[in-house]
Image (cartoon, rainbow, N blue to C red; front, side, top):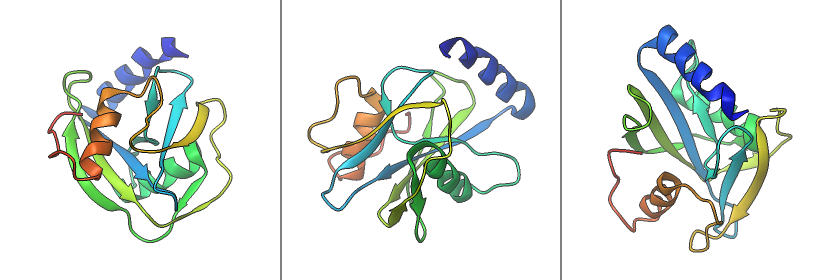
Length: 149
């Protein structure tokens, strides 16, 4: 599905001008971090996606977690930082949330996610993206937030 990415981005650009996305760092009781691998792009990422018309960023975060990872947010996610994705996709911004209270549910996305796994923050998987690695360090207070994803 990597061939679909340019069409999705073109549609987003034409229909919105500026885009807003959400990503969430979810911790389990052992302190591990939840990451997903998509079928349409390389590497390990946090669950997340675009904010749709008519929904808040928090609603989008909750929806994306259920769809991609089978995680139902309980309570309010904490906004950690805001990032520009301008170097990769002009006009795109990402809100980065921390989710500590959640329960497991069935993931509703079909065909978008190849793998969902938990990793120790100090032992990330091979293929983790640079932005994902930096956000883990930021969430743990090991570095200041970078304005760019």
